[in-house]
Length: 211
Image (tube, rainbow, N blue to C red; front, side, top):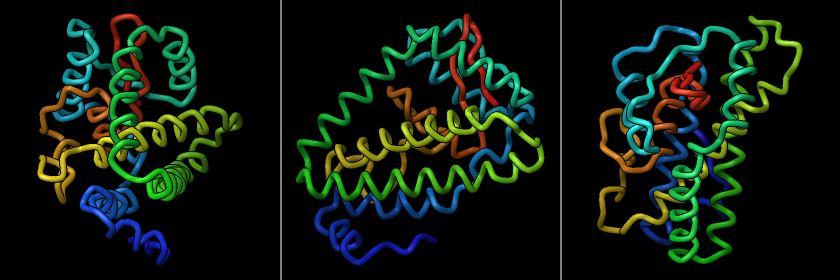
């Protein structure tokens, strides 16, 4: 469990919107990130991938397993170049960032987001450390890409928690990020895949690649 600095803990208690983040940080610090890379997709992995594909307007695409770091690096590059499908995700992310900025003070938002990004980055690096040792990965750029991808998705998820109505579905919970929860936001499904030990790399052609 992550011990929060006193000043941050005080900020998180200022409002229900920010108090939710404490639960999120606890769940994040206890996650087993990147622990299922390259293993067969299970039913929930496929469910989340199909839900994500529906949201981004690619219902005919299909999830596929990525089995090696070399393949993951190649597909991450291809996905970043073939980025039309990011439009729906980017618009959704921009909307919650704007809403969060209007819901709490800039100072509080900045402190909370700095903390979340620090914890997300550390947790991701810890999760990948064993992979790096086992796979003897020489080019760490792919590791940095995976960490950045997770950190960006996590930041968007936290903005969504802060932006949610105080009496809404997010109050004192992480319901939207549960495996079976319905959502019209792609980042929710991506975050759930990350929390299940995966790296949802992205869409290339008609295939949604998951490491």
